[in-house]
Amino acid sequence: MEKKNIDWGSLGFGYMATDKRYVSNFKDGKWDDGALIDDPNIVMNECAGVLQYSQSVFEGLKAYETEDGHIVCFRPDLNASRMADSAARLEMPVFPEDRFVEAVKQVVLANEAWVPPYGSGATLYIRPYMFGSNPVIGVKPADEYQFRILVTPVGPYFKGGAKPIKIKIADYDRAAPRGTGHIKAGLNYAMSLHAIVEAHKQGFAENLYPDSRTRTLVEETGGANIIFVKGNKFITVKSPTILPSITRRSLEYVAEKYLGMEVEEREIPLTELPEFEEAGLCGTAAVISPVGMIVNGDQEIAFPSGMEQMGPKIQKLYDTLTGIQMGRLEAPEGWICKIK
Image (cartoon, rainbow, N blue to C red; front, side, top):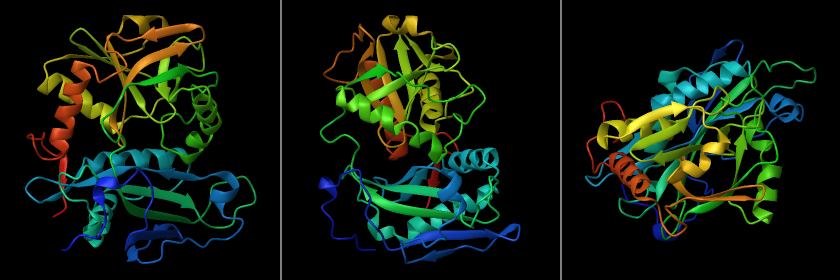
């Protein structure tokens, strides 16, 4: 299929309406068959559950064109599973996980002309989401829901390479100990917006949130898990209130099985931050954003890897995982979902 006439190399990380999107509705206790539709607009009642009580969850993944011309996406089964967990926590009906993966395939194929060519640095971003759609005025779960998937071509998160960023320890709490920090709900991101705007005004790229109970342990940032390197150890945060990042879990496997690193998933005290050699934020959009400095009040913690480029071990992690995603390296079984 002929590609759209787009300057793929100049794409930013933004929304562009494509030809088709997938929609399925939940009503009378069951999901309908779902369909691909043309209209990118949503019409709903003014009292829809999502507008009144923020009953919404979402996911994010990408489709790529590999060197040999196939279109693939990366571990969509884990996105399906995580959305199921998110929906259940907000008393929303679970969209069947097998149907989720099939819907991803359908909407990518229907927008095949929008999948950027291999080597362009661009990808097709996939955004599944679900929300309460019927009128709800009393505080209770909605009775009807809509599950949708949109896709949009996006450029690399960092143009010209990923420069290390400077982040700060947040003045705010992100998630209560038994709250919703472990699910991908829109409400979690809404509460982070004020904090991130403040951080940007102060010259920081992100906030690193400590745990809400003691404010002595590292948790995560507003939109990503954080990873650390110390010697040959790859260290990530263990906490019931952080999002189970698919990228982070994949990097743990890559670190151990591909790079021979020792993997530790554990509590990380803020006081340990100066002991690390490299740090990064991991997620779907950028894969890894290197961190060069963390500021905690008057304390500046500068990592030995510096502010000019990724540290050597994080660079290897990044190169290995993106090599797997783009088909340049052999992938573990089940990681690559072939769409075409």
